[in-house]
Image (cartoon, rainbow, N blue to C red; front, side, top):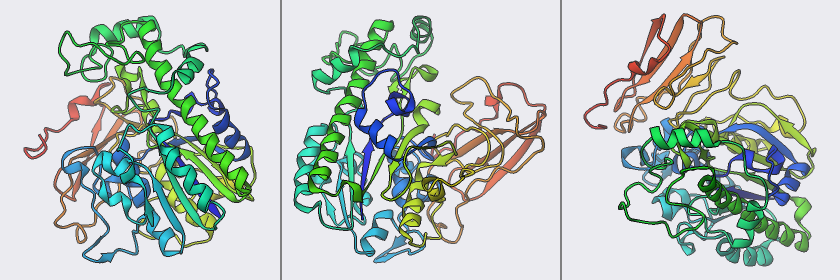
Length: 466
């Protein structure tokens, strides 16, 4: 048994052909989906890059592992253990494989890029320090992966984590792949009117007007795929061609991996997983080609699994977290799932069996701060949108479940920042559960007849987080 985990940074599922994208850029990934199971509603529990991978590889939500953002106290990973002791109830995913005798190998500059040295835990071979830490190209990554496969690919029980960055800015895919995208009709959203409105009314980093925020007024971009500003459809199309060109480039690189497995005669015995850490905002809430907002485009992930011996050509629409992949892998291998992990196995879906979904009813949008699994409610980000909705499934109030940090275990490890979740319950009730900074306690408040815009509920930040 072998597992190849292909981790494509910033990849939106709706820019892949197997998810219905109009541009044909991903024939290799589409073919993997046709052979395996495609999950249509997998979401990042925590985002963007650092929180998402911390959650997946630790098996724990960001509110428990400590990583809820990219900088400051919220980027400090709380390893489950101390001294020379690793907590067996909450081990790192790769340590589980390593202790089971698997060869765990990482080809990713992620740890260097994000100063996330804990990420190497459990990898028997770590090639991340041979990569520049982003933005290494797909060819630079494959220059390490392909020789390893040719030498060791026929051996049994290996897990390869291969991380590609070309879908992330800056967009420097080879010109042939940019042209492949440019020769096909671009996506319809955002249209000219939407771009004009964003340009005139929304300011700040990665907006249409201020994408290159912090540069001098006379500064000009040297990347032809990334104009100075997104003033109109023409400049937007330049950007999206760069993004889509990166997808075509990575798809080509993935094809090289599969071709090598075929040449070695082990393709049919290798599980192939394709996913991402997060998606990308492409006009949603006025953000362009970045992943700092709580939107469907940012938090919805591709998840495709082709597992040897299991049915192919399946689609699963159950709601999942990306960290559910960890217990699913153990479940498929017949190993026990650690009790300290937050994920839930979706292995039945891969076997063609019904799966209710790990997130229960409704559709939610993550705030990037470790959302909980809940009842029939919809999570809302009032700091990024002016409207809110009620879940039609909710007829009576229900408690939203948010993980709590055990006081005894984390007594001296304060939370980095507050996590806020607004949900719509009955038509007359808005519930808000607030995790206060630097405390494992939380408080709940129920407001009747709440106004349409609940943003006034936001607490004043504490002096430490301000």
